[in-house]
Length: 406
Image (cartoon, rainbow, N blue to C red; front, side, top):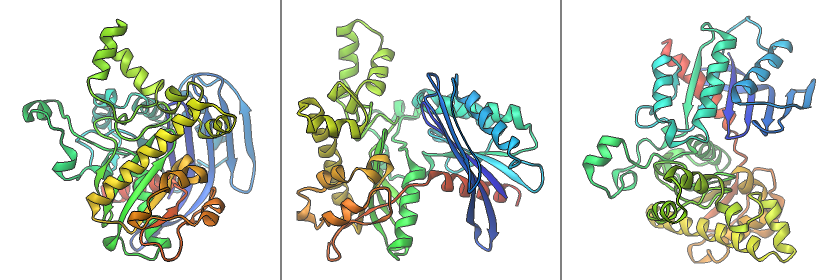
């Protein structure tokens, strides 16, 4: 089976095309056929597509929205002969927010799209782009090609009530579906599965803290492969400080700002999602590389942004060590977690009290690679794992179809 995995960000669309071979226990042995990235959607736009060990396409071109980006991807794959009608193939779409309804990947039908649209206001930066890509793919491919939605929230569905509920009146929470949903579930699940493989640890015997650190950031406390707490909540705004998002914030601040600035609450929420975090504190950039360089040049605000970022991650690690009663390892993933050795070092600084130590040589070496970065005798190990959400999307898509078709 060929599976096209589509992953929409707020201004990007990533894709990978896999050939999956059926095995006794589901699909495995993924062979990557093609991959690519559409960036700066809605502004300047650029394409970078590659067929494995073959041709590539790099082009600067204006891309108006994620629907047009999906059309460009499909047209290129078809022109390359990779989406011929021979054999079976399907499309898997990452959808950030599935609300309470979707506890696992689902075959995309009209009622599923309606349900995704109904919760899109809770993740406007991501659900709307995914929907545009889905509708475009349906238009291009027609009904004969099945498509599957793979939800970031599904992994956190069974959080215990002590972690999933807010301390608000039950009637309001039930009426409006207000609970802590959690996000980045695809990435957290990948980190867990890869850790258990490379550490030769059975999933059912693992206790982990997983950190997805990129433009969006979240932490998860995981026991036996199950999420028991996570930093993001009702929306992806809660939790860790991020590239442009505030993370944890006193809930009276939005109303206070709306009143004082004379604007609607929607505008304040946009500020908290797009003008805050590393960008807001530094006043210059959301990019960790830019901020590290600026700090070295004496920029105090950049330095403060980095200090706040690392402090808040460290604080969540400490909290989740308490929740778990200790952990086997802390796992770093995401663009920052995988590539910023200095940030990993700062996050773990002063954590010797709990047994978390880094081997700085290993840490420096682990840039864009998968390895353990703690000493052999550390009580709590640290790992860097290159998160591959596309593989998880492809596997979940194939599993969903095999289950649906019996």
